[in-house]
Amino acid sequence: MLDHYQFAGEHMKNQRGYEYYAKMNEKLAVYGDQKAIEFFADLQVYGTPEQVYDKVLAIHKQTNNSAYVSVFSYAGMPHEEAARNMRLFAATVMPRSRSSMPEPISTRSSMLPDPRFAVAAE
Image (tube, rainbow, N blue to C red; front, top):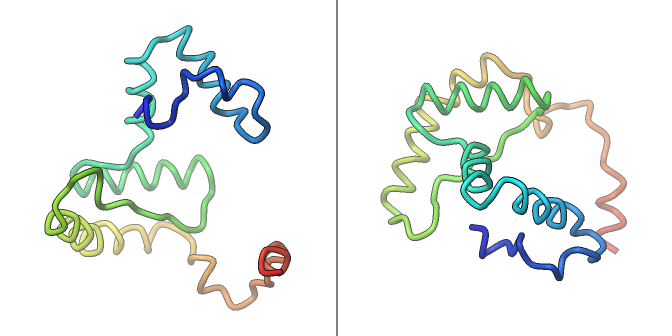
């Protein structure tokens, strides 16, 4: 993971738009690779359905998000396992999440178009 994102590379230090990477480079020097790996692993949502629900709910409480995007397949995971993960999430986590979180933005009838999309489409 550290190699993939090249956090330790000096080339990010003055690259506009990559300030986060430069900060991670500084943190790596202070805390070391293992702590960085643990930090990023802790950001991921994984575990039993109960653990996943708890993590999704914790993210919602911290960010007040109105939507959540899941990742069900990592690295070289077989397709069958990723599909099983998705089905398990849909059957066990989504029903509980729907009852404890606000309606997703995509289903709100009063939502106005985001003007950034018009600029991006030009």
